[in-house]
Amino acid sequence: MTGEWITVLVNWLPFLLMIVVFLLLARWQGMRSRGPSGRSLIELYERQVAETRKLNASLERIAAALESRGNRAS
Image 1 (cartoon, helix red, strand yellow):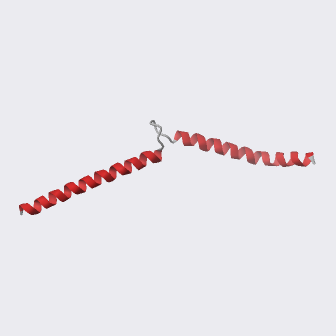
Image 2: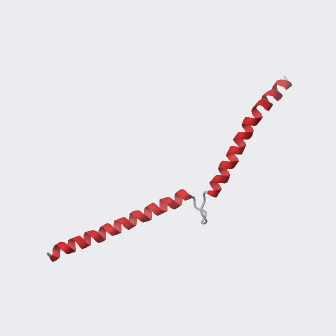
Image 3: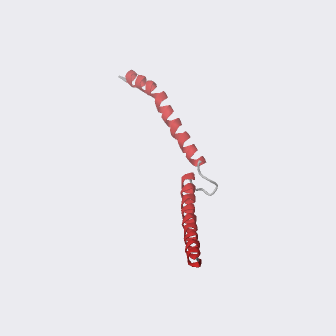
């Protein structure tokens, strides 16, 4: 009976070792994906998208104001 458990353990050991190595590498890569400020790259991209949307809204308001100003002058 004990011999069977040792055989099962020896057979599963490489698989379990691969899982542990994968998890350690995934955690290491997760830490590397953070920028110098400690934020993740996804958070930085989301912030950049929000800033771009705000800039686009401002530019659209400026364009609308210039267009209405041009229509009044004619």
